[in-house]
Structure formats: structure tokens, C-alpha cells
Length: 131
Image 1: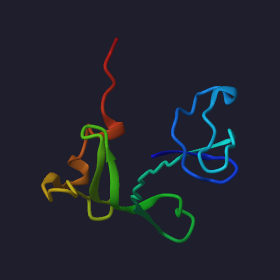
Image 2: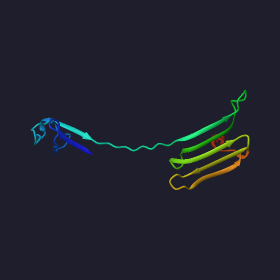
Image 3: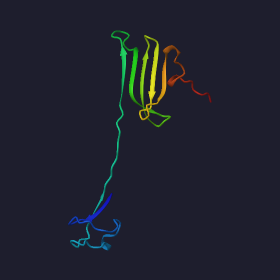
Image 4: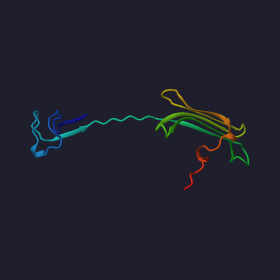
């Protein structure tokens, strides 16, 4: 909402905001040609969060993880919006579990539960096209 008011007394005045100061109609309350222009802006934002956990053994081989867990909001490039994702990659149990759902409708978009050793050709493991 745009607002045009007298710069001296604050009374609402009519007229365009782009009029040259010398050509302005004086304020009906005080006669001033001074003006204050106000614009009201509003915005909406949403927060989306997720949690990632990595399990590692204590000791010399602590750099290598044995389980990764991800849960929460994740951006879907196909849908161009956030979806709910739960994923567990368990090297010890040889399991890959992933469930992706639409938070608005509850529709399950992806539901995978398979041996990790069979989970190939996805994500960064996809083969690059040859040029």
C-alpha cells in the first residue's frame, strides 16, 4: 500500500508522488508542499530443516563410517519444492533404505529397501554420458 502525506503536519494528501515539488498542490490542512512517501512491503518465508548423522568407530579406522542417517526436508529438483526424506545407509547390515514423501499430500514418491550392495547407478554413481 502506498501512502502520500504532508511532510509538515502528516495529513493525507492526494496527488501523484512523481510531481515536481514546485507544481504540487498545497496541503489542505497547513498549506505545505513538503511530502512524505510511504510504501508498505510484506514477505513470507518458510524454514525447512533436516538432520544428518554419521556413525564412525573409535580408533585407527574412525575415518570410515559404518552408517549414515538423513531425515527431514530435502529439495526435489523434479518437483521444484521441498519433500520429506528419510534415508539410512547401513554398511554393516548391507542395507539401503529411503522413503520420500510429499508433505502436502502424504503421497509416497519413493520407497526403497534393498541391499546396499545392489544399490548401484544412483546419485553420484551414475555413469556420465559419453560425448
